[in-house]
Amino acid sequence: MRKHYIDNIRTLGILLLFPFHTSRIFNSFESFYVVGKPNIICDNFIRISSEWFMPLLFAIAGVSASLAMEKYSIKQFIKERFLKLFIPFIFGVILTVPIQTFFAEKQHNGYTGNYFQQYILFFTKRTDLTGYSGGFTPAHLWFLLFLFVISLVSLPLIILYKKSHKKINESKFNLWIILSLFLFNFFLSAFEIGGQGFGKYLSFFLLGYLILSTNGAIKLLENKRLILTTLAIMFSIIRMVMIYRINFKNVSFAINFLSSAFNHLTTWVIILAIFGLGKCYLDFSNSILDYFSKASFPIYIFHQTWLVAIGYYVINVINNGLIQFSIIMILTFIASVLTYEIIRPVPMARFMFGLKK
Image (tube, rainbow, N blue to C red; front, side, top):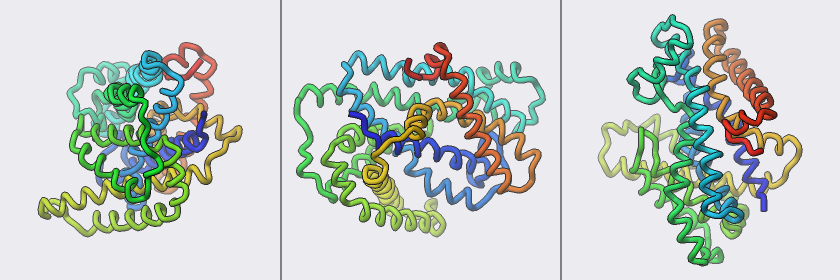
């Protein structure tokens, strides 16, 4: 059975990409494909949202995988993951990502060649895989690749769980048990690939599949949503204070260990609060939400390419930071939706970017 609140949380998560990645243009602590004048509001917005934003999407993906396994065989599930994730990743990297590095080359390196010359450079230049100064990168599409690999890595456990015919005893769920599950994420987070927390994202996918997909857990989160929301706000404030007041390069291992544990707990509490609030207030559908539920995946694929291209020209033409931010974000949203409308009727394009028939 379709869970509308999952669709709506995912849609809101994808829409959050527009202010988030626009803020990346104006942040002061990490480079980006194009950069504007640093802004402390953008800095704080990124710090507040970056710790829980991608883990939330992986947790939602775990819930969606659980729903998919109710109607798919193992073979069908693998095929669906391949067509939905891996194929769009390949075509996205070939067709859309080089546009981002073209503008990165122009801004950071003073590149004066044409796009097709840069296209060759994209596949031949030695790079750190971020692509912020040009060269090969999966860009934001690393999410598709990680989710595809995590789906396959998780499959043996999913098969064992499915064949065991044993279900998690939802009657034993209480707030303390749910909160303590952050330890699963905390210990797996040490495993990274390419600077990305593969173990962390794997853990959130599994927690989504095994826990957040159960009616017992969701009912508990809905009932405790106010407590969880209060904790999420309190912990987020404490985390921001820690960022600004503690120099973690000069503290002991114990302090680093405890602060890391607290960060993971905060991320988990925020996700639990979002699920509880979503089940209570977002468990419905209408024509607009249904549209964006279908459009959110291709919008994710296209949005950053449009954002980088639009951002490059806007920051070179307009001087006011607020106006720059607003124009980049709004035009990127419009261009992403229009791109979806253009590819939607085209069968080959639907295949290339993971849209169902």
